[in-house]
Amino acid sequence: MSDIDAASLDAARAVLAPLIRPTPSSFSHSLSSRFGRDVWLKPEYRQRTGSFKIRGAYVMQSRLPPGSAVVAASAGNHAQGVALAARMLGQDATIFMPIGASLPKMQATLAYGARVESVGHTVDECLAVARDHAAATGAVFVPPFDHPDIVLGQATIAPELLDEVPDVANVVVAIGGGGLCGGVAAGIKALRPHVHVVGVAAEGAASIRESLAAGRPVEVEPHTLADGIALRAPSVLTLDLIRRFVDEVVTVSDEQISQAMLLLAERAKAVVEPAGAVPLAALLAEVPLANGPTALLLGGGNVDPLLFAKLIEHGLGSAGRFLSLQIVMDDRPGSLASLTQQVATLRLNVLDVEHHRSGRRLPLGSVEVQLTVETRDHDHQAEVMTSLRAAGFEVEPIT
Image: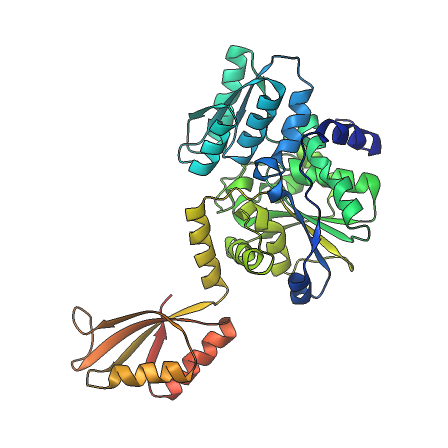
């Protein structure tokens, strides 16, 4: 593709102007205080369809002949972008989604007027079926990232962000297939070459690191809770963009992603999907950054409420926000009361308690209590364990 420059960005922004919802970057006082640097959030999860994907889909589809039929494959965000773009452009859309895809994402895609077919168990399987469908029917295949117009559409985030945070020093972007990160990085460097761009992949789907090392796309088998970036490999196009324009590529763990989701919900009142929290996870991982303000691109917020609840609970556990204990005591009147009195003295809120004296491998005359309490962090958990043991209780953490 030809390089992204100011003129091509202006042209793409003009195409998107009637469609795009403003997502102005906001300064986060709480995150800035926590990380010791100015932190700005670019909330693309507030975009139409709940993610940045509508940008690339609409730019590409707007350049197709009138009356075109389109086909795509996606776990959800790209599906919604293609479906809405098709509805607005009068196009017929067929979307292939994995069996077991998020029900809210599937329902939203249907609501935009697309036909949805469930095939396979991965996005890559769906992509193969979608390409075959396009070849058989003459429909235009709209890829999730591997097309110059898709990349250019995502790149329109760059001038917006630079206008909103003029002194930004770092821009942190998630990497899946590379269309978002490659496009935004190319746009940033075209307009402000000195800005440091960091791409962030999930540890369980870090094909980008192997691909950069090999100098070609390398496939991996993705295993990560961040399904929005769980791609087997970048394309030749996106790999080249990332190699040329991204200053650093790092990875984060699922633990850090779930903690980032919790932190965004608590401190920024932002409900994002796992892939949307990946840039903040990079700050939790203490990745190297340039001095100066840092902008985090929160790419999507299409998360199933049931999954969100599970992930928040996981994030609470990872952050040390609750502690489960196994306590063995003498089975005599007053033992449980002495434990609850000590818990009250420590000002702990009890979330759950179970009392067992049978069916367990316990010494004769002993009883087991399983107790879950709220804690502030891992240091507070250690303090609680030390205090209970000092009070004479036989305590072990339940992991």
